[in-house]
Image (cartoon, rainbow, N blue to C red; front, side, top):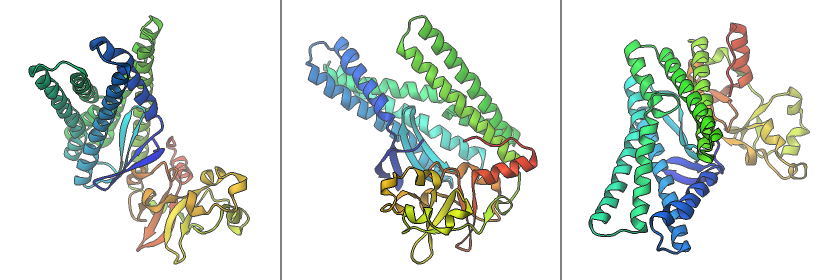
Length: 377
């Protein structure tokens, strides 16, 4: 899920927000201001309900950010590179480059998120209990009680043993530890995710048809998302096994054509480079150092009237958001590091020099040659 804009950094990790967050933010704030708060405390004004609801929704998203940040920090302590954190319609996601090296690391990374949510829920509910014990009974109490209850509910939901939930990661770590087979563990957790997801879809559709309204339809949508994510995890695990110990040098396209980052879009489209029919170009600066990667999808999004003034570096994926690898590295280890920004491409370096590029078509070509199913992204 790509961020629509970036908020900044937490502990050096970029934090972004997808536009879809606005949907759930508005739904939460509207539900609290129009229904829950007035029903519980009818003595306040409409403006007070709106302010309290907006602040409560902000606290909720801060809690989600804390949940994902905990995953990211523990992952970094266990040797993984964290690309970024993005909040979106279904919560948040911390994008990691690579996978846990052992079941223990997987357990720690997966388990810390629900634990943080549970602790936050306890803190909020504890604050609400103190206010009530002190004789206060108003909107501030509700502002603590609601995020407290929702954080505990999220912690419980997240530990359900079904991928891609944290509970699915916990299940995978246990199966991996017992069997020593990461692929088998991934398959079992993915199947559990598919079964659980389809169950939510069926339950949500049944509830919608019997009059439960939007809430039931939302449940079905969550189930559909879980099914898709669990299926993608299973496919990626299968591809990793098919690639086996094949090195990146056996997959990559060597010596890719590069383009100056200062070149305009029009300049590229009218240059000799376009005749090579490449779908992407690594970009270089004035000293010849690689600074990023531009794809034709990014180029096509530039309006014709802006092609003469838009430079490639202005629309490219920066180097720190492009997966990088070595020629002797196992190709299977590259798959989890591929990013949306670079559209599934990676740059291959040897002793600091660019020696190759790996694209989705390179991986598909190798898998077709091996008779394996091609991955979907």
